Image (cartoon, rainbow over all chains, first blue to last red; front, side, top):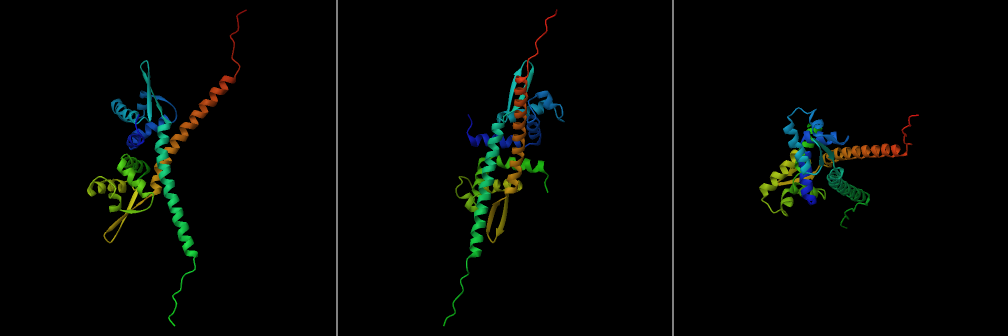
Length: 119
Length: 119
């Protein structure tokens, strides 16, 4: 079992390519065979297979062979782990910004100290 | 201006490395100088600078130089774009699964057709 850091390395690497993202998009509409995935792509079957291997290594994609047909399915749990990492970072940063905004607003409401003139 | 596909290529590539994710995590706590970012890392300043360059190219990170200090800030809009892509894919897939579940449930409730015996 890969730890979370290793999973995120592989998932983000897998998603850093437009062909692999197109495959993920296609698979969110439902499982598909390798030849169905390859049909609309302007590349060789071997090139598509390489992309599928990267997706499978990241565990975003599972394949199952029945007879001569290999069917690919998306694993939405793995997709959700990458999403959760991004959501946590973004919300943490937005909370920091909110807190900073509150501090600045409180500061603006405080009465300003005036310098006393020496008698 | 980069299009969304090119942005996603660069953002996911930038996030596919544990050091760069650690830098993003640190920056969600607030802006930091290059030397502050480099201090806890077990690598040369030059190696850290290379990681910062990858993050800057992806626009996840903005830098500003004041005098001799270069300060880095996270761009949460870019983080949110990658997050939105993942959220859309995951929710689309979950809706597909829900619809499939409904179809199967309806099918199970339908009275089964019995074969008529020939008279």
